[in-house]
Length: 621
Image 1 (cartoon, rainbow, N blue to C red):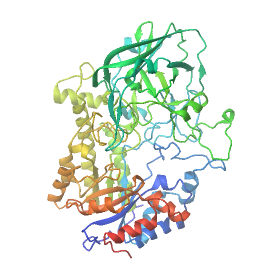
Image 2: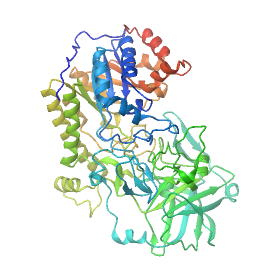
Image 3: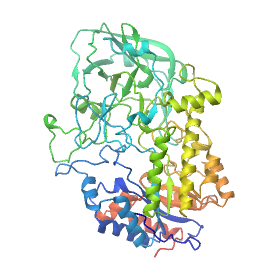
Image 4: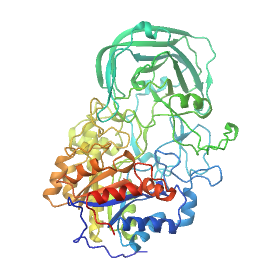
């Protein structure tokens, strides 16, 4: 049914003393993890209105309620042992996307849907041969089976972004018994980014400091339970100088000294496809596991997939765990380090979780390294925009949001579905291969490809979708907003000394969009950066300038949960002449939770927000 709401006029918009507009964003899937009713949503809209906001951004629940990077952010069983209650909320509300829109309109708010086309499921897994009762499909992969994908992927997992196929002779090696495992650590000095302005400056170790390092090997057939390898083998310890590479095979350093631990004379049956190497040392040892851990069969080195996170059972603090009766598909956030040491034997490994991490080149010192024979064939839960069927699936969501009555749609690239380490190995779907051959005369299945060109081809397909979406939205007198980032104007795939916006980061779909065309196409632009409480006007400066020249508003995200709800950060945005407004991101559950609990001690409470809005001269109701 087509529902018509009156689109609010925006000619008399409220402004702060610095001429900025302020509003909040509610992530509906995350918000309804806490039990929600129509009344509780009505109260949330009333708070937004009382703050003086005229617009609210609502992140939609995607079809099928796919899991995010929090595996529990989906439909899970109801019961006293489950701390999250999305299913109860959905039963209560019917359609959360509609209820939030309806209550926003009743409160007199302009409502923009935030659509995340690439949010089709984080790709968390359960062991081989197990079932997850509340997942409507099991999709086989490295580590077991993917669960909780969206409505498209449960029927058509082949529409995901695909890896370049392995050569048959290399693939066949993975079916042979393992004869050796090698784990290397850099004991030379290096520098690694661990924050926007923070670096690990590792001094290195002398050989005598690491002489006593040991490795234990555990094996598994299903990546559900692991046992220590009992067969005899030889461990050799050696030192040598070699280059350091990242997960994508890009050289980071020349001729660095390494400690090499090699387990030899192994004869591990081909039935065992999963291993965990436990490293014991008096010192913290650093490795890039994706390039510095190797596995061999009698035919040579084999392709492998790495992971440093263990599955983590979801439970309430006072409810004891019973591994014998565990319910697969109800896991919490995976863990690493000492916590992983306690869990991996009974719960298994979650491979490539968060890709190569949040910062830097993928250096790890966890001491727990999961290894799987073989590599992924698809980029977890990332849909490939090159297929007409995928773009039509997205258009169905656009039409539904517009027909439902949203005043506009805000398209966001970021998602939780592309957590892979060697992202440059992906993008080899048939339409992309054909387009590459057409444009550049190279068959990338037989010759080396330029990863930037693959990303640009994918970005062009995404733009085709945006053009079609924009036409439908404007034909219905609505607005189209599009998210961009600094990485769009300065494409960068390396992690070396880079900022947070590299294209290979795990929340990005690994595409390069034609940002100039997008600015020209959109009615408004939203900049989704990870400032981490350090607002930098230079980020996306050309994007902002192009939008400003066309009199198109630019909104900047203020991430409440990244401690950006403070006077210094907001003042810096107020002083940026190219910015029109501020969106408080993750406003819920952060600010709303403090309202519900009455907790004013957190750096993102409602009281703090009200005070900051007064400081910038924002007129509340």
